[in-house]
Length: 233
Image (cartoon, rainbow, N blue to C red; front, top):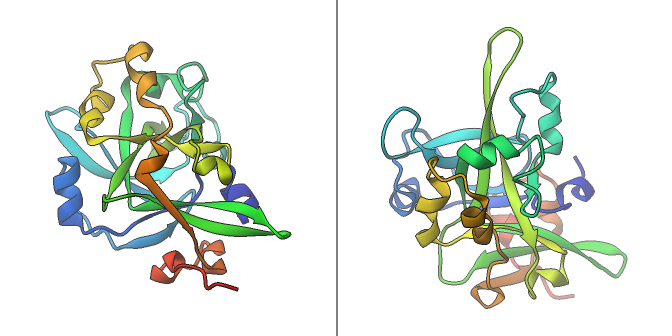
């Protein structure tokens, strides 16, 4: 995948907060190894928090980034389902069922976008001010292969860009506030009139962004150099 594909909406992000803090922030114990990630890309396994299946409370799980609809014949369709638009998420066949009952939080420490500058694409790192972790609004799905294997996958919801992000792109991921987590995760809530208002642009004044080096352009590179501020020319 090249950065033209990955930067369509929300195609690269980070998660490097300690798992103990993430467990506290999102109310779900993390029982698996979670190394710091600085360049998470589509089709990889990513951390998600959802309502526990068959019991009370929340659970932390690893899901394939790129939602595979339960009716899909070929799982590769998920490669094109890394994002769902807030404006149509309740209507599109690939997402509408998950939107009603299978919503999740996708924890993050920040995300990237690219801006055309002087004939090249300059990467920028974006993160909320004063918060070490936050959550994208996501959806999850289960798909079974012909031989019975189970794949659980997810997508990130995007919305219109705020004043800050619009300088880079016309879309941004839908970021939820902690006070909205419970409503978003409640499988008993399927009314779009209650859910869609949560998928609004995050306040620009609560975000910060800065240019980073070209190191992040390669999704195989995954260490703290990805978020290092770009050196002035």
